[in-house]
Length: 215
Image 1 (cartoon, rainbow, N blue to C red):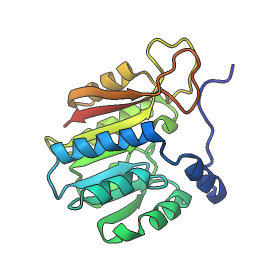
Image 2: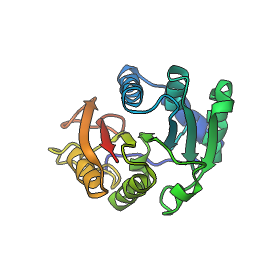
Image 3: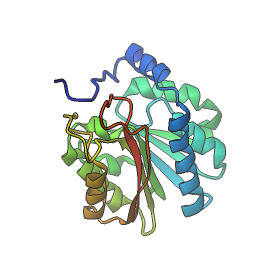
Image 4: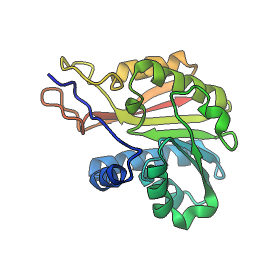
């Protein structure tokens, strides 16, 4: 049986635009954005610098920049095709956002950031790194670059802890995400919410959760 997951061609402009069109946030996915905005508002200074790992088409950035007027933003991605989509969507916020091209698997993405972040966020991206070891490395680099008290929020596709299905290697269990965050040095690690859970009939588009860690 094919592992539950998806193959992507994010460097292809046609594929990237089609993916963005198909990934317009649903109500549950909007709830993830709402939760992240709430966490940033309650835990970060009003002038915080937010770094998003895997900005993609800019859906999360639109929510954060539009609803938290004092923050600055940095979108990290390896796809110029996605940057083109994000720049068009976020044109109204051009003075508050920078785009940083980096591959999250290369081990040096954090050195390319324009400034130290107060928060690092990501949605539906880290599973595409393809291996638990890459996710662990990203968590470790995020902890190293964040100041004490800095915020990490990751909303991503997961493999249910109780599932017997095979999943692509980047879709790890919620409990494993929490273990990796603690191993990276984060405190106050929590799973904040879990959406569209389906253990018996999972697809590549359901089972996603949001995790928080404090540096």
